[in-house]
Amino acid sequence: MNKPGSILFLILLAILFGGGLWYLLESEFAAGDVYPAYSTLRSDPSGAKLIFESLHRLPGVTAIRSYRPLERLPDRDSTVVLLGLEPRLFAMQPAADLHADEEFAARGNRLVLGMGPGAGRQPPRQTPLENLWGVRFGLDFDKAGNSILYFAEAKNWEVLEQSKRGPLVVEKSLGQGSIVLVAAGRLFSNKAIAGDRQTELLARILGPRTRIVFDEAHFGIVESGSIVALARRFRLHGLALGLALCAALFIWRNAASFPPVSTAAPIEKVAGRTSISGLVTLLRRHIAPERLAAACWQEWRKSHAREISPARLGEAEAAGRRMANRPIEALREMQAILRAKGNT
Image (tube, rainbow, N blue to C red; front, top):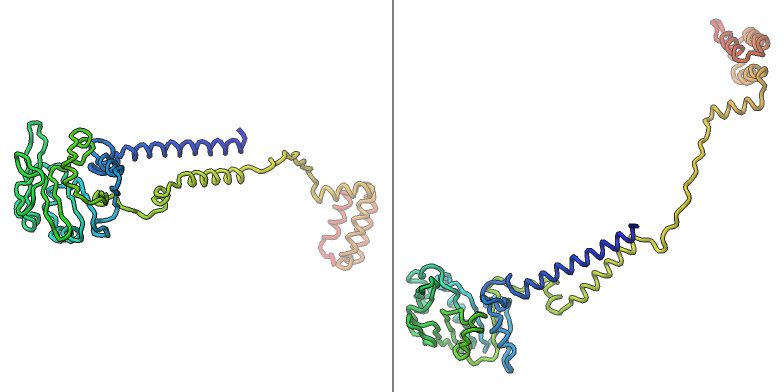
């Protein structure tokens, strides 16, 4: 496979992988398994998406999710619902948090606090919840071992729903608003909405207000303010896919030339000669062998004649003429005469 084909194959493979990953994430988030129990983003029996969707479709009712902490909500004349609260932690929360809930309700809001299932044993006595609000939880178990939470004590609270063990839903007015405590938080679950259908009781719990806010921030689901969150909010999935496609085409364009590079002929390399071999060839072409010693002698005398005595020069020259037919031996003899001691 050529290089452009390999790049295109890798791009297609990356697109398929990203599409598969996107599908898996969409499936997980659509089912809501990644969210806590009683979250309105969860569609299985443990979630509360069914009541949120039902209220959202009612004419004249506005149902929204909130991803900001309760103290940062600017709502007035709204019903704000917090579900899945752990009873023991709720009973032992600091008094300052209970006062903050009272102030939020006094602004004209109806604050609905739904408990999750009880965990093992009853909360201890003399908790801030009992001291400030006069409310104490009771915990019992059925034959199957499932926990049943109720209010063992609720001083100065109006009972909206009663069981044989004790109150299940109590309400208290505060200023222009009210607080509702729901021990049986399972009433809001998808399983209970689809099976029990206690519509009248849920209507009394939520109250007459037409703006209903389901708080998701207490589950740890808060607004991050990231680019991904904004893109999801404004449904920019197509734009992101288009940008990814443009990036892939840009990478492909830079990886392959347009048009393709033509195949060049291989460069032939010619092996050259050294300077010495060139000099030898030049001498062989222009100087006969019997004249080689004389030619070398003449070139040497041009530069070094003054350094040698005339007698030595004459003797060396005579040796060169005597052995002209043997240039190598003549040059050796002349060199020996010139380098002999007393050569001045």
